[in-house]
Length: 227
Ligand SMILES: O=C(CO)[C@@H](O)[C@H](O)COP(=O)(O)O
Image (tube, rainbow, N blue to C red):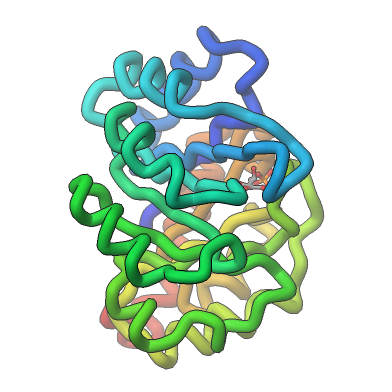
């Protein structure tokens, strides 16, 4: 089942607009909110933390918040994000020495666990043990740190490698994804699509959301996908 999910942190300078836009996109066909949490250490940028996530959660009741933790100490924020209403806690494998324990901690707080890899990290960093414990794998198609960057095509084979190893797992792509780049991601086997600029910069965001989902649906139908 493909999921088009929106990345509203590009609107974080206007909180009222952020919540209103999230509601509009969810009504318009997006399934999840992808919340980019950046701490100024793992990446140079700082975005938002648990207090803002909590506000969004209250402002968009029942929403599934996919929290992408671009933080140097992912172990530190599990409780705060769970208390703020996080649904999925996705940490970077580059930031922890014990991913499986972290996944277990996340599960104990009733969140799903995601494992992200940055562009220079090979797909083999996600071992079978890690992938089997996780609920979702995230292949970054830009260097983490900000929206609006150019899609890095050389990351796409990692999606295909992970899909071959884990035919049923949710595999998310994030960074520079839009109508012009979704095709190769879909063919490689992604089923969770994050898009910020492509949606919020469009005059017709709903059409973009639909196009992203249709592209993944078509690729799944063609490949007889199990995901
Ligand atoms: O995590 C990140 C970047 O660090 C992404 O979630 C981007 O924020 C998505 O925005 P676009 O690349 O689609 O503009």
